[in-house]
Every structure is written in structure tokens, then in C-alpha cells.
Image (tube, rainbow, N blue to C red; front, side, top):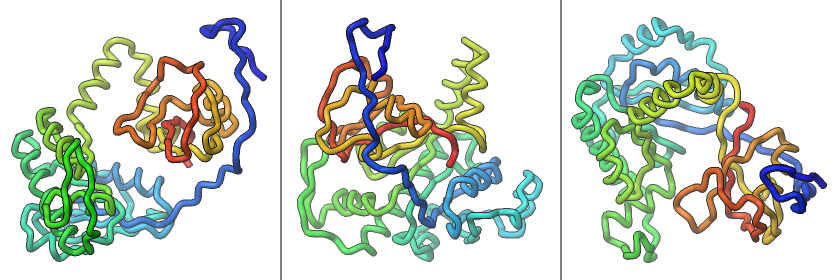
Length: 302
């Protein structure tokens, strides 16, 4: 038993308890597709090589010639021969031409990253338009290749059934995760409404980081630790690593259990919720958790 003197009231008791099972989080090889080319492509490859399981494949699909790619990566400091966990697969083509995309095994990828291509990086609107066009083409190709399950699904209070294009694309999104890099904050509303892709608003992330550092320069050390190739990073963990079905625990008690794994829990997302709750206000309130819930944690790189 551990007593919290502040900010908890002096009478509040927090029980750490025991973890439900040993921490075993095996990794499986993945197949990832990068659509587009960024100036920092070599940094992305090194981070993926450090994070993915051995035997993973990283497909790079863009209109940069293969010989030029190798030179750009080498000039950026990447030694392809020293990659340990991933194998690079190069494919040339235009990501907004359907015929080029259809040459790829789009239904076989675990995740797809649509990058804001450097060829149009000077125009946020043009870059986002290109990303959205690529996203819709990929989802449509996937939907046509995957067998459709005859069912009615709910989305934003409405419904879609077999034969509707949004229903087919939504089913494709359940098969493969697609992350679209967007530059204009107004574009995120379109992606949020469609629910066929997640997104990264890269310009906004940079702006927020600069604003935080301008307020307190010490925060730069924290950001560097979280975003560097090595060090700690954020993960999404399944609830069954910390609790048992319907077990009543406070957020403080889950934090203590996570400490046994050298992890820091900063938030959670309930199974029936769309958004995560970061730094929840009622940390001392006990509640029943589901094994389908997930927790957001900061932990050392695996």
C-alpha cells in the first residue's frame, strides 16, 4: 500500500496490487508502404528500422528515380547495408495515378503512410490535395480487392450498407491503417468526417513544439527525448497488461502498476470512445475497466 500526501487527501489509500500477467509483447514482421518523398526520408527509415521487427518490409513508392533515391539517402547519412530489421523495396510511380497504384499489393500492407511530397511542399493546399487524392484512390482499390462483408455499420449517427462507397472504404480502413500527412489545418476536418484515415498535421506539430520551447527552453530536452531515434517514446498498451476484466481501479492505481513495467501512464481511451483522455482529472475515482480499453504510456524504446 502506498500513501499519496499531495495532491490526494491524506485519507486516500492507493493499492498497487499485482499485474495480471507477465509482460510479453512479441513483435511480428510488418509490411509498410511510404507514398511520396520527404527531405528527411533517411531519418524516417532509421526510426522504422529501430522500431519494427526483424524481417519487415518498407516499400517506397514515389516518382524519384531509384538511383537518385539511393544517392539522396546516402547523402543524408543512411547506410542501407546497415539496416537490421527492414528490407527496402523500391517502386517508381505517381501516387495520384490510379494505374500506377494498382501495380502495388495495396491490400497486403499493415500500414500506409502518405507523405506530403517535397515536389509540392511549397503549397500546402496542393500538397493536401495530392494526399487526399492518393488516400481516396488507395481506399477505393483496397475496397474493390477485399471481399465485402454484408453488414450494416453505424458511422456518425447514420448508417451505410453494402454498395455504398463510404461503407466499402470504411471496411478497407479496418484492414489497413493509413496515416496521411497534411499541412493545412482546414484539411483535417475532411479526414475526420470520412473516418477512412488518420492524419498527422506536421506543420501544426512543429508550431506547437516551437511555442512550448519559447515558453520554457527546458521542454526542448523532453521533446528531444520523445522524438529522438533512441530514448523514451509513447505507446498504446492494451488494458489486460495492467488489470483484469471489470476490475475496479483508480487511475492512480493503474499508474502504480505501470511503474512495475518502468512505464508512465499519461492517459487512456475507452473501448467505446473515439478520443483519448490525457491527464484525466478524476485520478482517484475508482471505475470498472474493460479489457478492450487502452492506455497511453511513456516507456523506453523496445
